[in-house]
Image 1: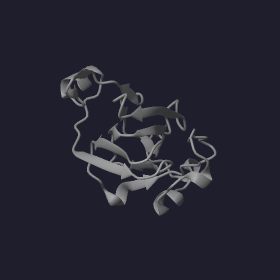
Image 2: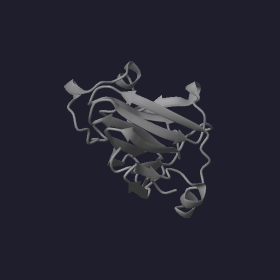
Image 3: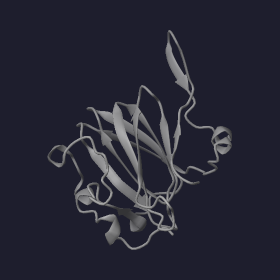
Image 4: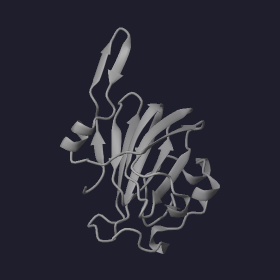
Length: 177
């Protein structure tokens, strides 16, 4: 897969609410996505400006992800960390909301992170490999070489200690060729 894919599921609504199909192996295969998802994750971020990322797992436990928002909104960002890729070090950024129901598929070989745009934001995502702490890595959310378009300045963001200590991309050994 060349890079991230933005997916907009069809929403069927009536007086009761709505229904949407968030994953179909057949429909995803038609898009060129044949990954098998093995784990679902769900996060709640209480405050706007919470950044979770930029995360990835090393091979042999590299993960592709399928990200969507259940409540609220995020700015979702994926950075290409495949050294031989023509888009190495470049990013894709999209706003995912509960209202637009869009999903971002992120192939293995990309670092991923998001910033919450409102309070009590819930994000769900599928991954293609189980969490492997020994392969868990990250890059600095504020790496100046990446110039990621975060919507809040550094004084306003909420970060984990792990994310606060992540190295710059240029300081990482090659993880993906």
